[in-house]
Each structure stands twice: as C-alpha cells, then as structure tokens.
Length: 290
Image (cartoon, rainbow, N blue to C red; front, side, top):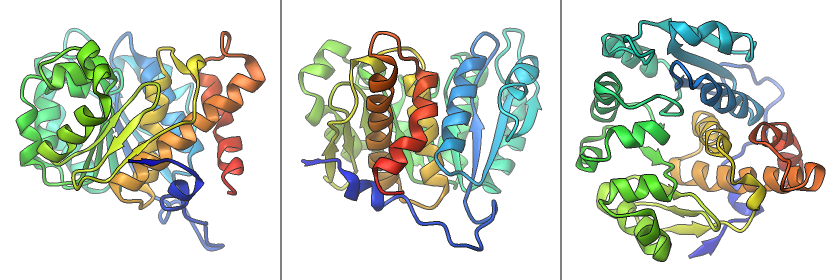
C-alpha cells in the first residue's frame, strides 16, 4: 500500500492552459441537501469550486434553494420538487439523469436524507447514469441494504464512507471496520468495482484492481460534522475536471488533509471548522506546487 503524496496530486490536477474556459474545466452536478441539511450542499459546492471546477450545477429541494443561493453565488441552480419532509422527490429522476448526461461528473448524497424518494433516486443513478459519480453520506445509507446494486453501474463510481457507513454497507459495525481498515476498503472495492475511500485517521483509498493508498495528511481538528462534505466536493471537482476515479480520490484526500493541516496551524485543532478547510484549499494547492 502506497502513501499519498504530492505526486499523487499531480496525477489528478492539471495545469490550466491560457485558453481555458468554464466549459473546458469540467461541470459537476451536485445532488445534495434537504430541508434541515442545506449546509451540507453549501460546503460540498464551495469546496468543489475552490478545487478548480469550471461550472457547478446544484440540484436541491425548492424549500432550501434560497438559503443555498445566498451562500454560493457561482452556481447555477435547479430548485426541484420535494416530498412532504423536504427531501427531493423521485418525480425528478428523469430530469436529474438528463442533466447528469450533460455534466462531467455527479456528486450525490451530502445531506440528501434517507427516504423512499431518495432511495429511488440513488438506485436509479447507480443503475442508469453513465457519468462518473461520487456517492457520499446519505446516498450510501440509501443503498446500504443492497450494495450489490453497484455491480449494475454503468459509470465509474467513488464512494466516500466513514466507518459507520462502511459498517452498514458491509453488514458490520464501525468498530469492526476500524479493526481492519485496509482489508475492509480493499475487499469492498474489489468485490463491488468501486473506488472506495474509507475515511478516518489514515484514510484508505482503494481501487477495484488492488491499487491502494493510505493518507497521512490531516489531523483531529477535522473530526467535525461537515468535513466529509468538503472532501466529497473536492473529489467531485477533480473527477469533473478529467482525472480518473482512483487518481481523483487519492488527490482529493491528500489535498483535504493538507487544507486541514493549514487550518489547524491558523485556527488550532479545537477551534477550526469545516468551512475553514474550504478557505484553506487554495494554500493546499500552493503547497503542492499549483
């Protein structure tokens, strides 16, 4: 197992040509958020933009559109129909899939909620979407009882579970996952043909073909709700810009941890916030020579 480093970042981050435009720097469709969880969509979207994305397209329930639109000016928005609990309705599936085909990558799951509607949306994306995807958080919980659906995927997939989510995916527990992190991530990646990012101290990035990394950047100040949303946005951004799934995941994890180390130096581990990570992403890129 290799250790992530600046060279891993250079495999996924490309120098911008002088004639670059938003159309050549990737578009990310972010399907995140529900009533009560608008912040997850905001953090993922801002992190994606800070990571060099050309165009962010944000699909959210109508009830939280105004909140998010006041926080991210740079995105285009799709305020969509929702169910009675403020989660995206499954009646949006066809429109979302159509928009995904016009995008370079898809991020789905941050603050999405788990209900019949979101389960239907996530399942449909895994089975039908041909655009590379990052699947995080509630989207993983939506398919936890049926991980075999990954075998029906038509596009490269990166999953980014924390130990609790991985425990649900493997019918295990966070404690057992953490007791054998490397094998758990590598076995899942190989079995279900998905790049697996098992988050935590020493994040594991495993590809389906037995290639793997362990990450050494980052610190305990990142152990706060929202840090995972930042990582998901960064990963989706690099994927949208043209990196392959494994390289995008490894680079995003390294950069995310590096941003965390910059934030810890600036704010201290106790006081730093996930939003501080986003503001430290530019320095993380600079530290890697970009």
